[in-house]
Image (cartoon, rainbow, N blue to C red; front, side, top):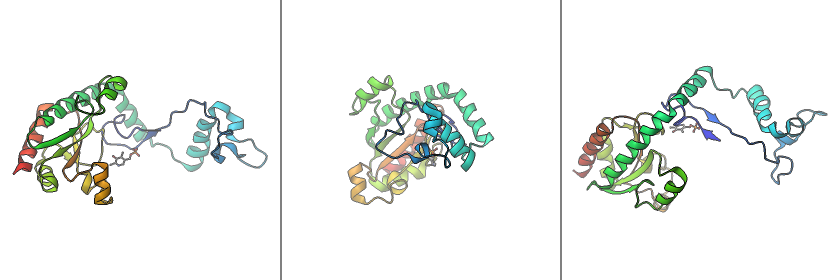
Length: 226
Ligand SMILES: *Cc1c(COP(=O)(O)O)cnc(C)c1O
């Protein structure tokens, strides 16, 4: 299952998802029950697994889920997704180049405590990014600003170009403060265990001109230091 809401659509304009199935899973032989695929669809009728074999999941999705329950993508959202996919390779090149330049710049900044980005040689995940992703480390990563929560607050208040937004994989750059948003319901001890400190800031780096993004980050980091 893949969320096509993010980079595939690319513009934060539509929600959608993709299911990819190789047809090799043994639904009937599995120790876990999948009655939707293995039980008769009606008394005396074969199950999806019996009727469709390798294409059982696809048939179940098409006829059992989309047809009967209506979980179909709207035409406009389908259009947005398809149009987004046409520029995916171009956008990803810019996302990756911008993220790499910004991570390296942040790592040298005096107001930044640390940067969690697998593209940096100092990252414990650097070797994995090299081996599995051709050295590319995506454009979503986090860094820690000095000054804890107060520093993070001043940083966010000073941003002008980068949006304060929860989404990721959008062409626009976005920043989020996990400790007070996505992970606010976690206890302080649990956040600590997960490495979600009060100064942690998550970035989803977009495709804007990188100098403009760095200027915005620099202004916000200078505000954080005050
Ligand atoms: C990813 C995301 C969603 C959900 O989209 P999915 O297609 O389920 O991944 C919803 N809201 C926000 C802010 C998101 O970033």
